[in-house]
Image (cartoon, rainbow, N blue to C red):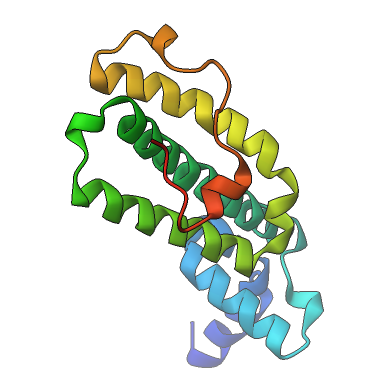
Amino acid sequence: MGPDLALQSAAIAEPPEAVDLYDRDFVAWCLATGEALRRGRFEELDIENLIDEVEAMAKSQVHALDSSLQVLLLLFLNRQFQPGERSSSWESAIVSQRGRIQGRLEDSPSLRGGMELRLDRSYQIARHKAALETGTPIEDFPSSCPYTVEQILDDQALPE
């Protein structure tokens, strides 16, 4: 097979766009998708996977917020129920988690809409962790979140 015939065979084969780049190389798929969007070549887009990834990005932000809330609430419970154990590292961790939460809410204000529900769910996880970490019976911690969203976000508010 001469070089011309090899080129013709390659041209007849599936075009690279038809190959499922998403499953083969996610980073390459992201870069190719970004380039297609930037250049307005919408016919090259893998719409189904693009939709999934955009929705996954939103879910990732919600999970990150929930994770920061859980850590902050655990710190609050430890501070409140173990006053003898208070340390500057706890205070520093509280400042750090609050900053993460506030940053996410500034970047995505729509996350604020479900804060009450997120706070309650995150509190239940933090409550279980606090019981495990402290050896304190879970019943000794309030069954519902004793902190408000305002307290969570207020740089000056600390549980006593």
